[in-house]
Length: 351
Image (cartoon, rainbow, N blue to C red; front, side, top):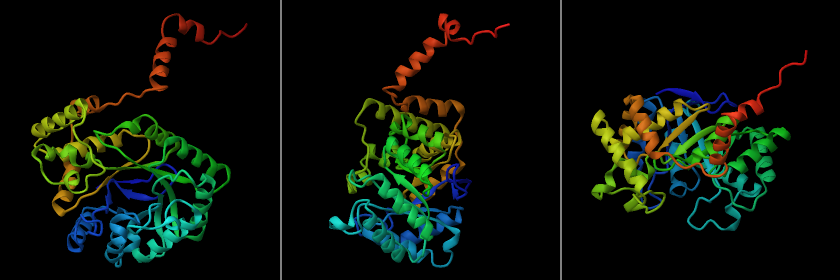
């Protein structure tokens, strides 16, 4: 397992995988029982993983409770991240959801109790709520950083313009900085290439990338009607709903056959190579439901793609950048060639 700092603005040292623990527990109706969760936690730690990602609503708090039990002997070794916005019960009520200072503080106190710790390394605002002013969110996070109850603050599933504005506000007002983003990203969901990932690279934010297998689509298992997120949860999944997605799965399966790796390992190997080429840290969040799936993810650490294989996967999964990026690229191509070069060239110095 390799390590990196989480973005260019922190010294927080994290493993190249984050262990997503949304499947720790069965409070939500599907997931891993405590014993299987413990086996996954121990295996991840044994492989060198130290970055743990949970949320107050995962399995309605059970994920945090299990992590609290697992962390009792070596809390400070791990980088622990949790989130708030949605509430920790099936019917949380109006005062226990959203991003207000009231819910932020109440959610953190409850998470700290479940996790059995007095601080978290990284606290995510899970989703924008379209109500709470960004100033209130940032000021609340700044208070929590100053109190020592959280060490770093970050935004999950926020659009690029809101993250950029938040980073600027925090900088101007000398509040605790926004240190990272968390977004969906995989071979079948690369729309973050348009704005979010270039923004993260420009601002030096860490990027935690969830659903690296597209909800299981990239394993190829749904072509055989295997059970998984699609059959059990029926949410946060991809299907072969477009010709491009079918072509991506076809390419992943072909390269898996060439390399002898599993389709999941090929998909994650592409993501690791993508991360290696980034100007900031991109950290896949792996979310296994059992030890077999975790071992498959860990096996990807030993899989290397040839430049041709990486290029083929990148090309088949490429997204259209849209407005204004394509117009800008076309414009730059025009002004860099022909007579435009002469028009734009600097004038010679006057004698």
